[in-house]
Length: 601
Image (tube, rainbow, N blue to C red; front, side):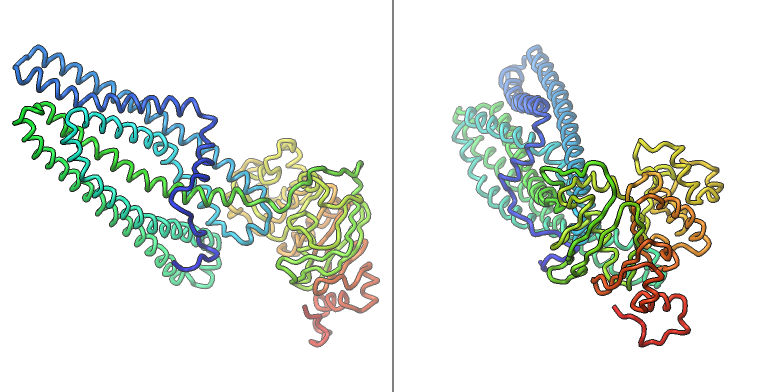
């Protein structure tokens, strides 16, 4: 198999891993009583199952052979009662084990999703969403069979096998040994099947993850696909991936189609041997006809749990593969965590100090280089620069989406690494250029499931950013439905919702990252007054391409190639006629600007 790529699964481990199994079984600990009851029911079911051949033997030898109709009626009644009891036990055991599996899967999904919420953004930069969705859905579902049937059923099958072997030896140990002579053939067939299915199953899991990643990426980017008429080529690529998945499934079906008839043939061979040698034993008086029938029934039953165990091996293989991937995800430590001992600055003022800051996404590829500046409480700071200058990276560091390699960022004198992540982010409000709207309603997208924000506060925030003029579309209903990713809203309306979101949460420090770049001029004017009001008395940092939005800033910082090159008010920077002056000319006086004067990045 080709080396795993960004869209593929990791290499899988061995089919059975005691460490993984021990960890998986740990999820059964809260449901120990259910497991014990299910195991007891399985054992009782196995005993009743073994009782059937014994009742058949008694019926033939003690009643049919001597034509005892009354005794035959009695044994038939016992036979029916045993079958009914066995059915009731199987029903209870099946219900318990399936319910047990669903409870464990519920717990596991919660743990995986909860862990995903804590992981750093760089993790999501390296792992496609489709792959992570596969972890929470397909991989967790694969464990269902193991928890719902596998663990308990394996115990029941092994116990049943022991009982059957004991019963066969009890009836006639010589014929029993002849029956066991075909077991090596079954073992050989099983091992060949295991090796083949294991490799095919691995390929199936890789291709499932690949198709999930492809679907997520291209459905999310469907506008781009349609805009550039890439539908046909995208369909062709999907068809290739889909055909690969189908081919892998076909190979697994092939091995199953060969294996199970092989087991049937081996079982038929065992029955033929029993009939042949059992017939001689009947003639010699060492075996009765009823015992032979019981023996044949036991032989048939003997291969049933063996077939089940072979099938359970595949379940075990799938579970080991899925659990390995799930635990690899769960064991991925969050790179950005709160320190063991959290420092507090006392009363929150909102002062930010950045000292000799260096940052790189990849080693030695510096995005920010020796950046230093301070933001006083209540001060309005703007950050400008050409694309790729490091503006958004600086914002990400303030929010601790990533950690810097050198230097320090201090909030009220306390370094960010010494603050609780939750506490830090509770003081910050961030409005991004790319607004994400969740499916749900308007109010839910503003409060983001924070119960402390009332409907009145939501409506006030919407009014302050000017969204009230759009409320007529929603019949003035805060709980009007919004479709996935805000499909029914314009870009400007999404931006206004993001401003209302920041207003409603009332942060101490507000960060606007290109927040008005996708808003038309009319909408920009409409929200500018609300922004000015929001920023009053609040520490704020504005990252903007539109210089018109930051002319009134207390100070403007100019980043260029990751370095802080200029700092001052709009008037001071214009007077310097440096990078800021050229950027300003580029936007407002293009006809006066020579190509050689355009700052490059």
